[in-house]
Length: 282
Image 1 (spheres, rainbow, N blue to C red):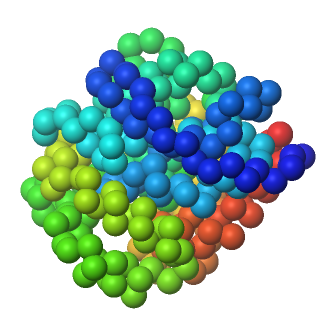
Image 2 (image 1 turned 60 degrees about the horizontal axis):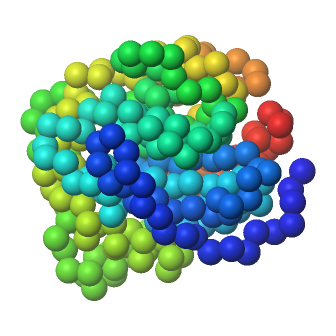
């Protein structure tokens, strides 16, 4: 059941994890009577990716959005320190230090890959964290092989572009994004380096395809796919595999008309899908 609408603004916070100092945004963190939710953003984005999602989820959760390593206002490690095991360890330490019990975990794209590795315990030395539910939004499940600079080129193209030029491009190419979405992406683009993005591709290559990890998830899981015609990370073969892996109460939902940044381009439908899943698994 939804509680009274949450009107609080995002709070900016800093936290020291084993890898260094990280930044995160929170909505309603002081309301200890509510369960927790952790948000992990995509590559070249930041916690500001969730500026519309956070306040809505804060109607029923304490919400925490982490700036992942190399992004936003978090630590900027040298290339070679961007494996999914390392980003999953960051998120795990974040949850443990904040003492978040059985949180809802939501990850988009690279954050979805990190969430999948974290929740499955893949490569971990000891049993991982229990989650109440898991939501993977168009997760990056295979970072490919070959020259990492070439594979990262689509994501590094905006880095270093003057803000006014990039703003105009984002507005033209991203119908459905609000001014908050645009400004958050501009801020994120100004704080990430090409070297960090290339290192994500280089350091995750050995991980291979992550979709088989779905079978290890014990919490109800929702996988949300962008429109196959608009650049989803999940092609038809991958989507068929996802659907075969998920049994009730887990589910797989494609949102027609949504590009890869589903929660930005198709915010209302994304939140409706998330809400239905959470209500079904309350």
